[in-house]
Length: 116
Length: 113
Image (cartoon, rainbow over all chains, first blue to last red; front, top):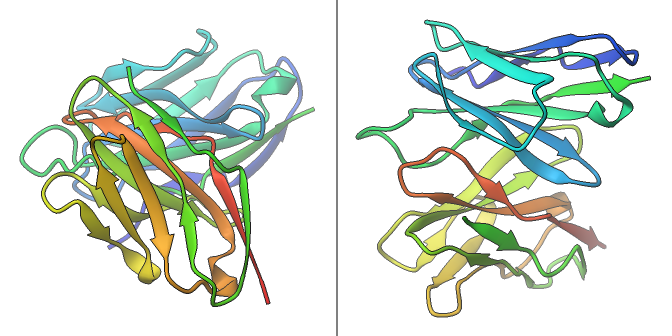
């Protein structure tokens, strides 16, 4: 079956701009999580959505936001970009809470954002 | 809260040698434990997971890990590595029933001929 799809794969923005990243989960998965990966901070949890509701949020400023649609697809948005937002943004999907939950996350290949 | 410590940032090893990547975790509640691998310019791929049951877990590509509750460890092992195993390896923990993963800082495995 198709894996987690993230678009775009690469993008370059300038400081002050905003960006929207998209994630299509594996078919049937209802939970989508977002992670930021940087050389300095490693992998950090941004937020998790399940059935269009944010269940968990990491320790990031309000410039970082997300949403989930009824088809489980998710978007994250970063406004007023800063140089430090340059990172690989990874989306992961899973079944979510319930009988099928194994805690395992399936990751996409990521969107690499460069802020100049 | 959960936390994960990967004791080695980089592990150099020769091809066909055994390797162990160390991982210790901290949690006051029941957890799931995972090892993920990341190849350059790619996302994370699950190697293996411990949910419950047998403490020795076998994963893909010949890797295995042992859950040790008393030492709060989940070390990853492979008896004979290949050049293609060169990658970054992440240990992760999550609370049972929650999808949020807490990752370690990663261990870069460098396999040379």
